[in-house]
Length: 274
Image 1 (cartoon, rainbow, N blue to C red):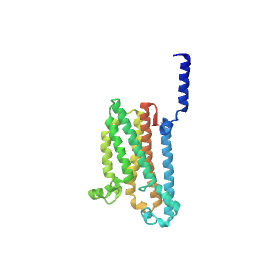
Image 2 (cartoon, helix red, strand yellow):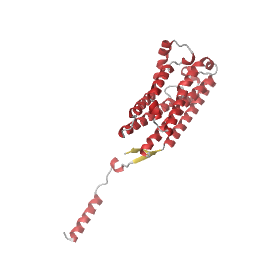
Image 3 (cartoon, rainbow, N blue to C red):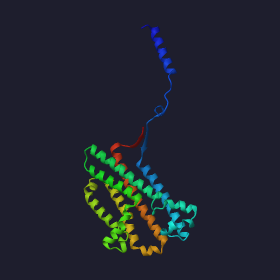
Image 4 (cartoon, rainbow, N blue to C red):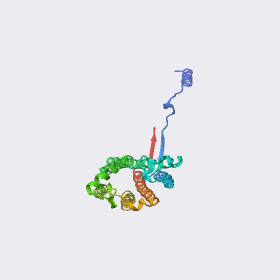
């Protein structure tokens, strides 16, 4: 082909490309977005969110008590409360169907997702205890569900009847099967825990102790001092908020340790949107 013919072909191609319609729609605007997840930043944001929820919850409950309304009477006395107090009660850490309950449920769910991810990594690299990671993830999924619908509350009356409990540390009798479950799972996971490096093992053990101190220890204390709390409602509400904060702190420390553990496999954690 002559040089003039070649030049004409190139010019024609340029002309076609210049008049071709531009691509439109989502495909034209699509780009890969990678969000790098820092365990410290993620846990810090969640922690600050929880502190804000606890502050709003405590302010709401103190406003309720100042209006002469006790926790069991809240549902029947909403007309006596201001609009601000009603709004703050949506954050009640001791209530059901509140922002606090949702936030805690999401935290359990996040732990479950990371645990399942680690289980997949363990299986991929043929490393031991993959099933332990998987089962632990399923436990956290169950805890997330329970935090929303409070299945454990339905165990109180049957356990009281079964063990003939009328008061004391087992007044909230759901703690009886909970303690049994903790002992069984703990025994099954002794080898799993001690195969971890100390930098992961120690925070995980600490997180479990902190969580159980709030979830079970404070619940048993509240049962033992139920008569005392009835006449000291401010102390009772303070204990409730400390209990839930300990639970949250334990799970938050556990999540932070899990993220660091997963990060050791992949150098950095990213969430990609394509």
